[in-house]
Image (tube, rainbow, N blue to C red):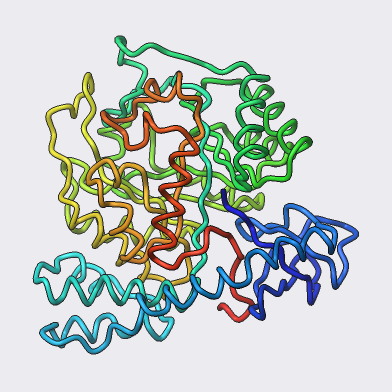
Length: 436
């Protein structure tokens, strides 16, 4: 689904290469020993995942060139400069301006922007975030697949619908070969070039996870992102050796007290150590927090954004808290859509627009129009559910998940229609070579 338009290698700098896409240069990390200038490659998440023949690459490029330009023109029109906007507060304008200059926002600016309520100021915030997304990421919108291997979990998180204490939930676990076959269908049949493999924590041994990752990488070119909770330093190292190159692991809350209250027996310090070790190994990080977690304060939300920025992830993953039955927070309220959209916009502005911002399935579940709103507030990444339909309802993180009953072809068709409307290309072109 993330088509990964072929690009031509125009420069090689040790472990990084510069790749030309229709006259635009992007950078990617390279692990191919024999890559040469002039080769055509596919890249995902900033990694070269496949080298193509020139004939194969040119055939794909011919099919894409006109459409790519049309999409780019649409996106440019929808993301035109947001400053100045009539009716917006001069103070809000001043707070936003550093981000447009590529400078990070300070704590006071983040707190103020998260408290915006007036329609004119919200419009300014959202449009500025979208404009900055366009300036830094152009119109690329990576669409990952996500494959939920098992809903078994050893954790007792108070907000999670697959937590271990939920006795009424039927549990499932794909066999190793079954998991490999499901991944193959997403990659080979539906064209995904980036795939998140997810399960509850402790559902598989490190050996089984390594076997799944290694065999997928052996059979198909794909960026594999691991999302199995805390698997330990050795587990991280073994999965990296097997071929995983990304890790999706939220820290959920930057407040140690909230973290300990809702994650029995866990510690924020250990979670952050896990993330930092993954980064040191070389993983691309996808991390973030829950928006609207009961007991969360404005100060917590600000610090969630600052902590996420400090970790320097490839992608920010912030989504709304959604109450789930048979959990201690079953009667708690979900946050308003506006609060989640403000968070996504501020995330885009907070680091000068560098990182990718995920529009989560939880946001779509909170509001049917959440995906489009999120993409127009600075978001540039989506995930489609590649879990076999017979298992998908059982991965019940929260009730009535968006797309739980939709086939993968149906999800793809709907997503492509939305991206065409917004002028986004479902690709991952990597970072601009001139990015800071």
